[in-house]
Amino acid sequence: MNNYKELKIWQKSIELSVKIYHITQTFPRTEVFGLTSQMRRSASSVATNIAEGAGRNSRKEFSNFLGIANGSSSELETQMIIASKVNLISNAELKSLQKLVTEIQKMNWALKRTLLRTSPSSTNTQDWSTNNQYSGLRTQDSGLRTQDSGLSAED
Image (cartoon, rainbow, N blue to C red):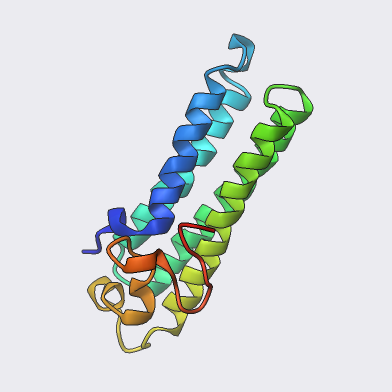
């Protein structure tokens, strides 16, 4: 079993979800079953699918769940744009959230590339989670960098 909580992408996705929950608390009650609910579900879906994929039995399954997470992040970004256009969030809030969504999407693609390049003979999540190419996405590594994407906590 892989410890998804150590994945930087999962941690960033949790951060995004918490920010969305806080921002949507300011939305009018008339939006409780509209954008508030949709944005919260989309945001939580990103981290949830990363966690579920990490707990699966193969890189292919994990990659599939990363694809679903990426779709949820695109869905969320669309909802954020709508919220901005109807003046529920400021342009500054939108830009800040979009930056985080973009960072998560870049990390997602980098992780998918790494998973698909990892030895094809390995289907166990234990094997790729300890692989040096992949371990750069884990928090215990200094610098939090991946060799392939250049993503870091500081970016």
